[in-house]
Length: 58
Image (cartoon, rainbow, N blue to C red; front, side, top):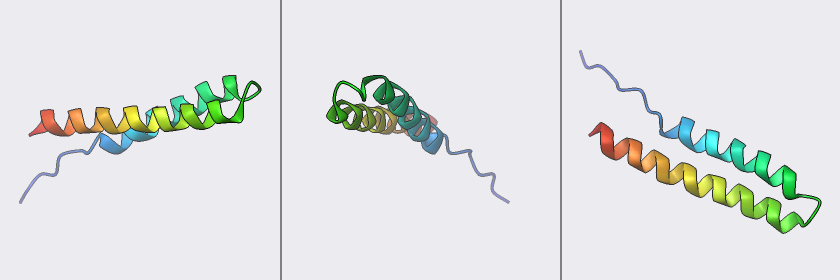
């Protein structure tokens, strides 16, 4: 019987994406491109954090 480790990578990616939406909503009246940039930045940071979590769990 093997015990599965909880994967926290998806939580990190989703959390940072939601944070990017929040930051993007603050900038959406200035430029819609800033909103998109905030989304992509949140996604990128989430992927980096997920990779760090994966590396530390091994």
